[in-house]
Image (cartoon, rainbow, N blue to C red; front, top):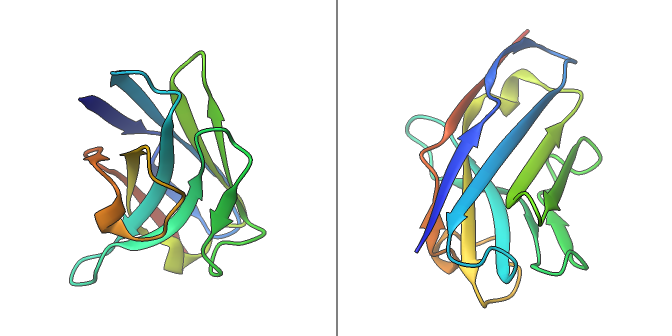
Length: 124
């Protein structure tokens, strides 16, 4: 089992930056592909970014490419999402997810573990 806890969300203005953190505990963190997703009320959870366990493959949704950066700190068992140039349409609950042993993916069903989410609100 892996437990994931997100933090770092908040209320910011358009153009600002935020860094989300996802702290993992439980089984070995190193071999997990990590992803970030987001969801707004009434909509399906959508992919934001993912990183392979080795860090050699990274994938971003087109809507965040060039503005968001995913990274991980293995010794700290933490994955980050640096979000720059935030827009009101980035407003959502952001979720961290982990998949054990599968390749990088933008599909929610490929992920085995999920955090509880952290709210990001971007005002115009």
